[in-house]
Image 1 (cartoon, rainbow, N blue to C red):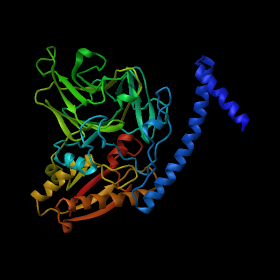
Image 2: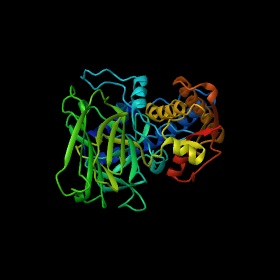
Image 3: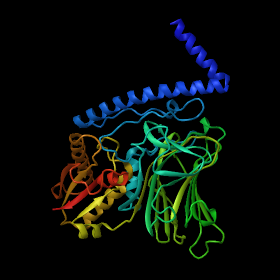
Image 4: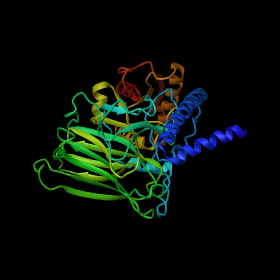
Length: 445
């Protein structure tokens, strides 16, 4: 025991001294401990997830707190998150008030109500998606390019994320790097809002989402800028701001706006959604529309940028999609409605609050067309075992059916079927293909 204590004392002394040798030794030691923890966490997570799916219960690995995931130097640990038999997108809309604010926490039910009233419609054709679940912790995310600084795959609150380092700019890797945004598109992602009390030097602009026409490394080409501001004092609300140029005045002055994000929880992920329709731009945070701009210059590329000197920036579940097609047109063309807007917690049949906008549109459509009956069919990709995917898809289709009945649709107009991984519509060897295969279909019968 004395020997162990002596070794620990030497290690601590080397790390505290701050010398190059001490830092190198500490880094090697941290890597060894991290690798061992990663392997153990992965085995444990996989076992728990499989048990949860087989038993049909909504329980997976417990997420770690942000505080526990941070090293003393402010960088995130890089342990693996909970694995999942179906790599579904996840987000965690904050349900706690900002410290010192007068806003009450939002319950899951109230979040569902906000999303149900939201007019955001996710795109139908996925162009780019990255949930980084298949990425190795500590590595640069493989689907991205860096224009400045760096980023790495990391774990925060129990989920794999992209940790964008201070003063960095990343952009998605696409076949045509200068022109991949269509005339009509939606961009969704979850961003982490850290507590300024834990990072006293951080306030002002943190995340910045820039949209360009042409090359994304030339700020003369910038057409839209959306950013998140964090307050200097904890009794103030975070803010979202935006500025844009009009189609005929791209070299002129910027038009600007901003709005407070009251009650937005610190140390939580929040859902940002952007909808662009030829010239109209809408911006949403956790289902609430914050901007509605009618005359905006069309962009063709985008970047994510960080500013303030810290590495506490995390984003996840980035999805870029083209669309969206009205529900009636979708059904008439295919005899069914394929939805990517209904998503679930990892390894669970729990419907996420941001799905309520899409579910509400299905409900409205069925009420407007009382003769239509739907088979609600859940589909997964081929990640994990076929048996687990089948069980999970069945539970999810039943959950959607129950939600529709809860919202006033007669049960005899619905039936549920889990299809598992048996009916792919895209290549499961790519991230975008797997994303297309994870879907809910409403098939007319």
